Length: 346
Ligand code: KG4
Ligand code: ZN
Image 1 (cartoon, helix red, strand yellow):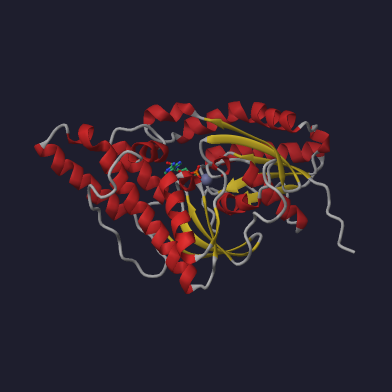
Image 2 (image 1 turned 60 degrees about the vertical axis):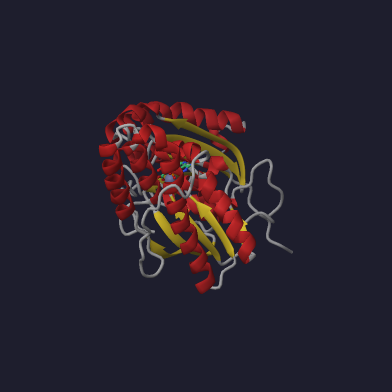
């Protein structure tokens, strides 16, 4: 007889950067996923750490209450709490970590510390009201391109919670590259979604930007950023309206370059490691052109392709809760002494 699955209600809490989020899951199924964005950073063109932690402090109680209420769950029905321990901004992490610790202590239920990038990948195992059965979750080994504001990696997943980084960026992350170009173009923060929108009506072949040639599955985006900066400075000298008249083409050509670097590396890693189940995770996986190119290479190579729903691509607590669920099954709990960790390797 198959072992009876436990019936677990897990609260996930995410506060690593500028989104305060709480989610309740029942086993793998999401009951709620509340995200409070912080508009305060927009006018500064990037996240201001001190303002982010203050804002988490204001949002955390109402966001957790909203997640419980939407899930129709009382606190005393929770089985455990999972929280993002790192990596991220320390002041932001401290808010979620302290709240999770306090709540677990007062309710007398286990606590699980979650690595933010593991959680982005584990988002593939989330089930929501629209998903049916297990057929939509990846098979193993699973090769995941993780692309966020702080990370760009190729990760081999051998089983749930077992991650091996095959390659990563040696400088900027892909999301950071989008955000920096947006700043050069005078667009608002975060830049990725803005560039994505403008690029949709631009010409991907208008400008040619350099692609790095790195060993293994490494990435680099800082050379690309510098070359775009010099290119723009040069154009603006002869035509002060260059930016105004060519924003869409610049965005499309830049996005085409970044996406090709990502997709070509993933394709090569899949081929060389003989893996045909591939996917993408992290904020940049919301990019429409990346999603389109992934569909194309999946068709060409006959991959089983997994792309999370948009709400599970950018920062959210549902991914923390699902990671907590798998940690609970392994009884992988932490005590009150574990503290927030700003820099935390995979
Ligand atoms: O995973 P995430 O929400 O936070 C981190 O863990 O960093 O990723 C945020 C990053 C930002 O750099 C943002 O510009 C980028 O994801 N991003 C996008 C898009 N949506 C978010 N980049 C390109 N296209 C998008 N549609
Ligand atoms: Zn993230």
